[in-house]
Length: 249
Image (cartoon, rainbow, N blue to C red; front, side, top):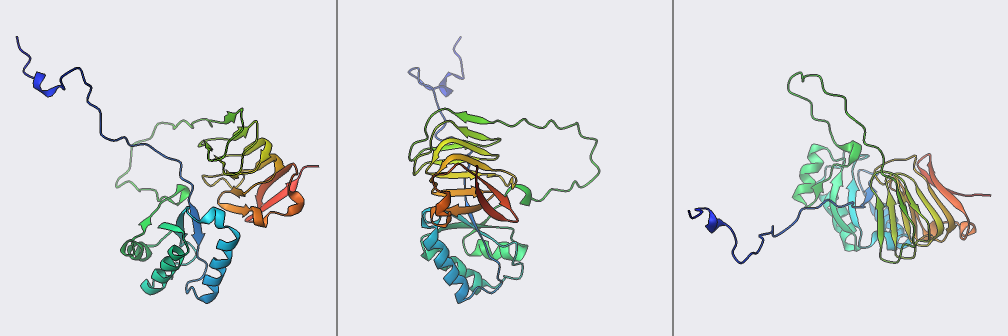
């Protein structure tokens, strides 16, 4: 008997595949937090200075505007001027975070998307009382150990735990972890710990020659790292919203 569904199958032994795949990616974006509700010439001068001292970090990186500190910044002209100034300097500004409804509407009108990150995501309240929930199991951390050098152009990510590099991190390479980063070698590239917002994360390295150190979004570039710390065994940590680096004796 002939199979009536045979016409739906590809012939010649070929296998039909989807024309695309949807995959998650760990994206490191730079957030520019605006602290004045009426950005003026001093704001733009400070922006120019920051770009000069952190050009390798900022130019070509995805950038967000953080509006948490300026709920009153609801002028279309002011926000448009900020967006235009940032983009004119080569920064890839694509979204806003911590925007109130009026700011969100303005941002969308000006071509930016609202990005909800980590603890900033609002919790949805149920319309009616929900039945008791089963106990939720906490997923264990997935610490990652890399037993080789990380070469220029490579990126190593520990999305849920600590990252340990038994080797060096070359200039132009990037290592990222949601927890701590341990580097048993020379750090010449970029290291970003606490990438999902853990302000208690630390970076440890045997020899500091870094292009960038960042913890929970706060960073220091090679130009702002004390020259006395270069070539030393150090740890980096946050204290009072300041990125501190100290030498191991």
